[in-house]
Length: 275
Ligand SMILES: C[S@@+](CC[C@H](N)C(=O)[O-])C[C@H]1O[C@@H](n2cnc3c(N)ncnc32)[C@H](O)[C@@H]1O
Image (cartoon, protein in one colour):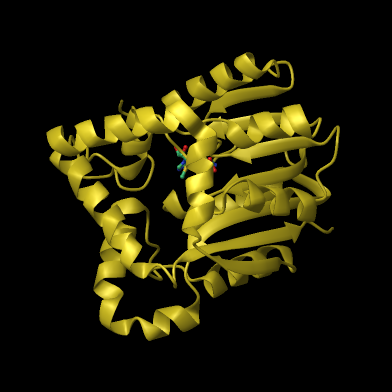
C-alpha cells in the first residue's frame, strides 16, 4: 500500500526511488495509534474545551478512532484528514459502521497545506502526527490558521525531556536511528518536550504543556480495545518482517525503543488562539 505522493517524512529517497517508510508500514498493516491511549485523548479534549456541537478538525486521523469518538460520544461535527489513502478509507468505514457518517467526514490531504478557510474550526486535534512532518513549523502555522479565535489547537507528540536527553548522551546514536526510522528529524535534530513547548508558545503566545512517560499497561489496553484489528495488524506486521527488508529495519528499530522505557513518553500541548 503506497502513498502516491512523495510528500511525507521517510519517503523522499531521491528521484525515481521510493523508500518504504513507517507510514507505509502503518497503512500496510492497517494500524495507527498514539501513545497514551484514550486517556491522553480525553485530556486534550477537555483542556481544549471541546463540547457538543463543536466543529473539530482531526489532523492525521489514522483509522478515525478519535474522530468517530468525538462524533459519537461528544456530539461534535468532525473533519478527519490523513495523507495516506488507506487511513481515509478505514476512517470512512468506521464512521459508517458506528452510524456517525453524517457527523464525521474524511479527506486526504497534507497537514502542511490545509484546504480550509482561516478560522473554520472550534478546535484542532493532532495526535502523534506532526513528528512525521518534515516542516513542523509550517504544519503548526496551518493548525493555527484554520482554528477560530478563542479556539484551541491540541497536540500529542512523542518526545523525551531535555533532562532525559542529557542523561542519555551515550545512547544518542540509538535514539537518532530510532527517530530516523520512524519520523522526521528537523534541522534542529530530535525535538524535545521543551522544544515542542517553545514552538507552540512562540506561535500562540500561550501553551499548557505536560510530559508523560510511556506506560505499557495503557498501551496494552489500547491493543485490547482494538481487538481483532490489532491481532490482524500483528500478523501482517510479522509477514512484512519476513518479506520486506525495509519494513524489517523499521520494526527492529521499534524494538530498540523498548530499551528507552523510563525516558520515552509524550507531551500534551494545548494552545488557544487569541486575537
Ligand atoms: C501514528 S499515526 C496516528 C493516527 C491517529 N492520530 C491516532 O492517534 O490514532 C500518524 C498518522 O499521521 C498521518 N500523517 C503523517 N504525516 C501526515 C501529513 N503530512 N499530513 C496528514 N497526515 C499525516 C499518518 O498517515 C498516520 O495516519
